[in-house]
Image 1 (tube, rainbow over the protein chains, first blue to last red):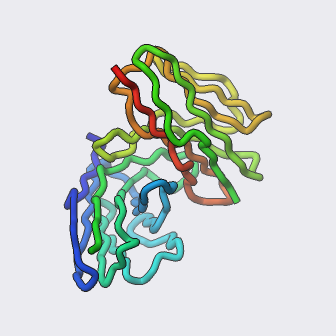
Image 2: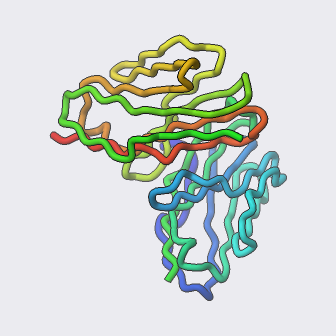
Length: 114
Length: 114
């Protein structure tokens, strides 16, 4: 138990659906992250939030829309996804965004886009 | 730019064997941090170790040991007397000031057979 909870664990959606991924951390951290993990590829950083403000957007397509209402919650809103978006989406948190901080990860949402 | 290479995609060993996972990194920064994470089948990445660029001392934690060599830009991870529970994907990662984000290698899938 890392203190970071992601829901749902599995999600199947059609290309025209709209769905949301949720992440909640109980660690009192101020930074939260979304990563994408595709088969046979390194983890890709998607978004970074620090004190609820987005500080990084790694050229992510607009069909992925993050939301961070407070330092404990992070959402990823999905709409009109493509089959190549199928992947494991991991949320993480850390006390700060400094380069020496270790990240605490959730178990991820396995997303399948049909 | 920073880069992490884990050349070993998959390794399979028999229980009680020793195994070394290789990690080679690239960065132009003089201050940086190296990490190892373990991803069991449950999905969440679990932090194992952090090492800063000014500390080349090797570290041992139980059956785990890490060999950091700046001369070869390597940060290798050895598991002694492997156990079935060590089966997981292991990621090496790098964060340096200029990159402002954690860069992961592609991971090594370790399978320990009984």
